[in-house]
Length: 362
Image (cartoon, rainbow, N blue to C red):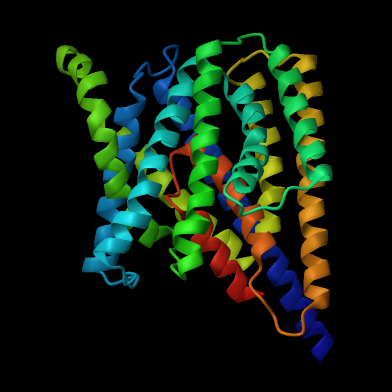
């Protein structure tokens, strides 16, 4: 076979592998979100303890990350002083614990489909907080686009059959804390040249997150669990749930490292629509035409925002003689990773690490 044939085979193989990475990420992300909903929902497994569930995730991920780094030497730890840890990692861990606590709590009150619609506000939150911290420049056209996304989500909320004010407050709070965490990653870690892949992220951030969650757990959930004599820890349910959460971190790193941040964003849109369809057809959540119309508006706004970011990236690359870090692509990833991380309880700081991995590939 000639050189052209070999090249064709290589291209086909690369395409098939890209589809495989996308499929693995969608499957794991989908699984973690639905699994968390199953555990927390009172009509399903009926274990409405979001702090405890998040602590189980963090304990599992911390232990596994420690073994992979310290025992099996699978990944090299990042050199970090105590001062850097306290000033950079601890604030990120605090924000992450709040984000996971609130996002997992929202599953008790809201449907999977409606939560996915509310998560469309993540680019709005990241952009707004970025402007506030002067990491983003204010642009009128971008703000108009953000308002269109917000309007679409508002319409979807108006048409929600199982609208719960407390659940919406929890999810919006989770989006706000997660967006702040992503901006803080840029300010406190990325700007200092510290890059963390998913395993090292969990190694440093998960124990910190666990410590912050322990404080509210003592006062909010521990007394209830202590008095619930009928509860027995199900190692299969919580073990497989935690393993899926950890595997999702690796899938994020694999997907972005082998393809691109843009691929992950496109795959994320497919995942969102699949979750909405699953929520409606299998879980039997009510999805109204107004829901879909509002989410459609928000979806178009997010798609336009991603397109504008990609065009700006291409314009910058065209003007550069020396390749520079792919900042726009990294931000696209962080907004998608924030969407995933808030709902799935996985990926402590993976956005920054995976974005840097993506830069090395370009």
